[in-house]
Length: 447
Image 1: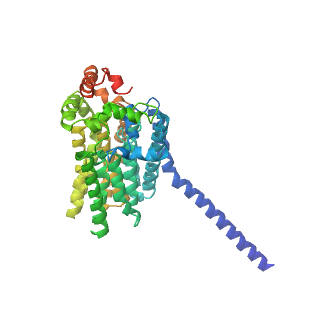
Image 2: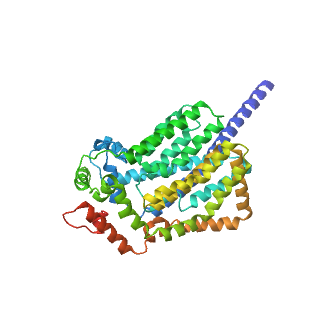
Image 3: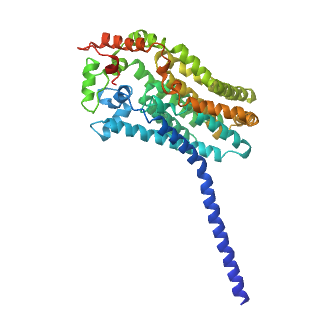
């Protein structure tokens, strides 16, 4: 009897231990998911609110029709992938693809940021949460894709960059990074002026962190060579399009879709001489919005500039390694990639958002890598915001308000004389495209 009692007690203890373990596992699962779920739902809410009245324009849709059957041309990779699955591209198909790619992007962001928060040390976790909140609230985070740029290739740039950063610490998968670099430039060579620093700087840091291992040096070197080679090929040695003019080319592409390809877009991308395009089209249009847009964007981004500047200056001063100091200098200089993009392209909101996002990506990467001097700099910034929480709250409200304003969602709201702006487009394309019938602005833009 005494033996049976002892057995029953022991079985009871084991049962309670199993029950307690299951309960702890369930609680742990819930804790693991709460940050990711909140971030994803927040970005999903912005998606529904900001895309309600937006759709893909003809200029964006045209590039989905391009494939490598017309030569090794820029921006043809995405269209080539589409051509594997279908011979006829529809507007509905492109919109679904744009939505699916954006949802995948915010899922990636949610998982990465949630994981960063959970794995942060208790003394730094509050600062990590504050920085994640700043990123989510920033009007130039991924939400810029939902305003005027739904369906643009920027989404693929960010996905590829984040995917490469996920692979960067993996012994096997990191060897795929040079290939991912090539894919990013093949999507659009503008990657070199936008998100390239967000990947190149971490690759350089891996050389430092691995004590200059040959593997890290090879991956960094090959990645840079591939990006520079492809950029040069697309930018300076364009392939010959097998059509004499963009009007015939647009007609051919339109036969494989339920919408008309944009001849003006094809002209400026593949037919127009660079000097003519820059002097006759880009420069005059830039003058109509450059000063007001730059002034407002600088004002909007000033708090983030101060924050980024503090982190890199403090990290630079705290480091006692010359190579590491050089890396932090590159981090501070990364926004300069915006300059050539701004000089030769009109989409300043896209370029501006890219360098803001690049700064956040690099900071989060260093925090994930537990780089001591950066973590300490972030902690000091987080302590400041905790002590002045009202200031932080006002900044978040300010950013949230701007996310829904035309200043961010419509760059062309800065154009001082919209009629003159539109007329310039009409005159430029009617002069160089030789349409049988003169076109107006709306027909040129495909609207």
